Image (cartoon, rainbow, N blue to C red; front, side, top):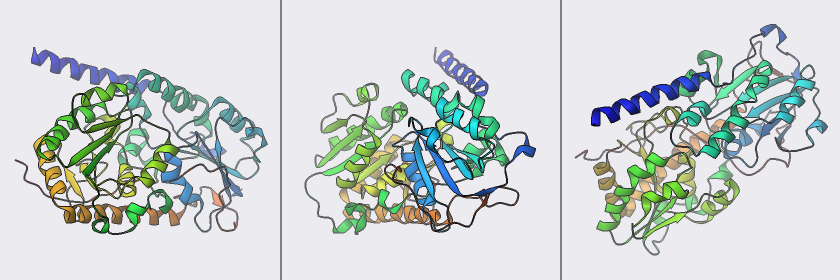
Amino acid sequence: MRRLGVFVKQHARTVAHGVAQLLPRPKLDSDTSSRRDGPIERIVVFARLPNPTIDYYLAARLAAPGMPPSQIVDIRDPTLPAIEAEGTFVIVCRYASRRMVTWIDRNANRLAGVGFFTDDNIGAVITGSEARLGYRLFLYQRGLAPLRRLNRHIDVMWVPTPALAAALGGDTVRLMPPAPDRQTWASAAAAGHPCDRPQQGPVRIVYHATGVHRREHTFLAPVIAEVLQQRPNVVFEVTADTRAARAWEGIERVTVVRPTSWVDYLDRTLREPADIAVVPLLKSRANHVRAGTKRIDVVRLGAAGVFSQSAAYGDIDDSGEIRLPNRRKVWVQTLLRLVDEPELRGEVALASRRLVEAMTELAEEGIPDLLTPGGPTFAPPPAGKVEARVAGIGSLALTGGFAVDAG
């Protein structure tokens, strides 16, 4: 019976991978003779706002010295035709709308170029087992279906990780790792040394997940249950939708918070610190290509982060950050030690902060490779200016290390 279950799971994964290969995917315009080579007078980013992808990857880069004026426009904005097209370089961020693609169709000959950025293997999310049906339909409608028309205009494509580049097109895809604005993570909790923050009340552990991490909830729930049982001075907060929340039923001192908008989440985590933040990440096609943007959230909370060893967060190294194999005993041991040792929590929190600081410095480079030979060129611009339509805040992928008895 067990062999049958393994066979069924393997067969389902094979079928899902095959279906994913049939879905539309972003790719460059194959007609290189039609590439535009005019100067860039401005950049217009089309995105679904508010959006953490904008805040973690693009907003700070657009404001870098030497960048042309820029404007971030919601793809649901009915005033798209009012945008000046002549000399505009368009960046499509993750999602598109019919109105937006029609605007690009009509103005293609006047544009300085079209770029596409995505931080997810959307096809893998759609064909995986984690996302709700409604979210999968949304991803197809906004993330994949428009590509049938949009691909003929794309001159350059960016993704944050080499794994995602390989999944979408290999050496034709350029890398743009996370580069968050300091304001996205420089909360009061992140400002000073974590050990200087007085311990008021119980030790607070949090897990803030999106709706596509149901397996991570299942992995983590018994870990947290044991930690709570052994340490009565600990409380736990988890973000979970109705389906994921079932994993936490019956565990005392657990607060389940329903998912909120990006703006509300950002505001709350800037104001409410945590002592420890857990970031489990199990193996899947979607997780394999992710950038480690949850590290930014951990730093904003002023917390000691505990991450899975993974492509997103790296393996053990000398950075001082904690990265663990996905074995429950190891996670329990590590969390108990962090609960008991405030100074260790402080050092671990500082390790993640140093990595996020390095990410923030990447924003000074502006948009990567936009000035490559034969590619788009900037008109002589003033200092970067981002219009007031920019919504919200600032993603990531680096590495770090911590050893623990594997048991």
